[in-house]
Length: 40
Image (cartoon, rainbow, N blue to C red; front, top):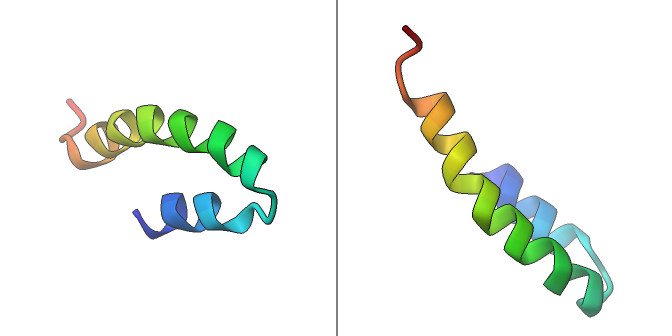
């Protein structure tokens, strides 16, 4: 979770942050679900 926020804040340019924001927001739930879900 902190890594995702760090990735969002790492971009100094506002335009690049806006492009990276939606991507991380869409991939964050998937990664969190995979990591938190038990592996069968």
